[in-house]
Length: 66
Image (cartoon, rainbow, N blue to C red; front, top):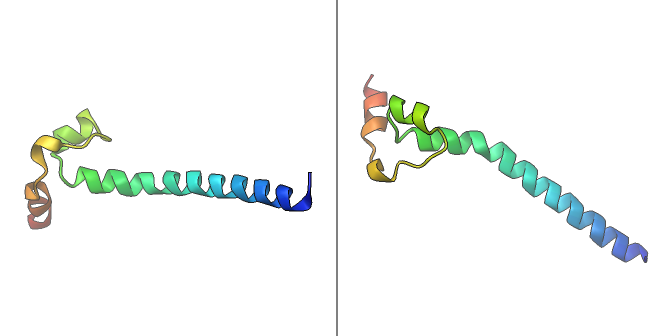
């Protein structure tokens, strides 16, 4: 195996690990963003699900007003 091939493989592995790590760090932001559109009951029922039936800002407005 040549030196250039080793560097390419090492770079690909490094980039793959960094991509996985980036997705792991994005999960809390995803949960926080999706839960702004849900009621408290919806959050407990399915914390990772997207509420396609109610994609409105009503819950967000209610939160800011309280």
